[in-house]
Length: 486
Image 1 (cartoon, helix red, strand yellow):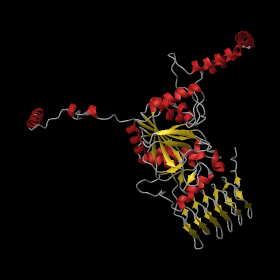
Image 2 (image 1 turned 30 degrees about the vertical axis):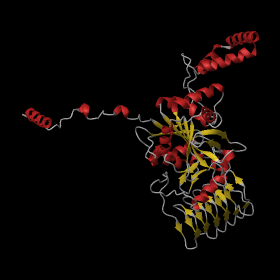
Image 3 (image 1 turned 90 degrees about the vertical axis):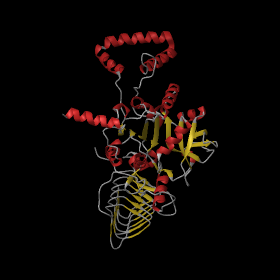
Image 4 (image 1 turned 60 degrees about the horizontal axis):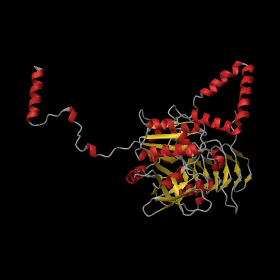
């Protein structure tokens, strides 16, 4: 009875032309005309020591240096990836990675803690070294065999000379890094010597993922950018590499950036890495889109010629020389905050709402992982002007053009001016802080003076330092953080 009913329903559908076959549920008309959807991977380089930030990075990775009170520097790259709907984001780590991993929280703040895709961490790694293992076994064979081997090696060296000896080492090295067909293997662990080297050392995993395009980002820049615009531009021009460029920020120097020159079409015609005498004020914003196969071929070739370090030293000059490097101009706010002066300036830009630096945009929020705390408590004697006061703060003194991280305490009579305080700093009664960066859990004693005077250099105090009452820390002084006990 049921089968008859089904047959009648089917015949009725056929009569009105509504029958659909499962094979026809996905239309194939014009399928061959559709452009292939690119497989895209975002790679954030977060492994550098960040030594130029001095005391702020002696005990933390630069990507997790606080910014704006409640954010961390890596939040900008992560949030831009999230809002650009990039499904796969990998992070290369190396230095002080524990606090960084705690902040990343498996990608949860950016909705990247997924079963498939999402965030993946690439820490430093080592590879199985069979020669080393076999060598350890040989050590157990006794001194007699060792002496015989030494005599044989000595005879060989005397017969062939030092040049052949060195050539033999090179051949062994080449043989170790190649398979039976003479192709390079993907085994190359250890600590990276630069950003190009960092990419190349992880090529085994990158090759396994096999992206069409690799979006390479840094983790110490303040900016907002929809990477899809850069990717579309890159694909339209069929570029080998697209560099995001920007005009040199006010007060900065081009000698610490990659400096480019472009023609009217936007093709990069010249690239200089940290030149002593820059030819232009157009600099790279440390955002690159690479054609992945071309990138790997170029890195393979460069690694044959010598050690890989930063991509500004070999990779980008080579791609520019070949003539298929393009620029994508970023005309909104961007600043590299990898040195104290630029970090301080970006913080002041945020306080003074300079330009289009808006980090509270509901259309493009900068997402982060932060502790849940009550709103700041402003007591009756508190006075503040043009400042950002984070949750959990208790203010009983004066705060002018400054940023205070969560949980800071400013006692009565204390004055903070043009400064940045990280989490849980305590400024005691009558103390004064001017043009300074104070790391977390520092205590500034009563009547102490930090910075100030005619000198305009930034004063910096590291983690958990206690400044005795009445102490004067001169402008430009840098006090290293308290050492962590074993």
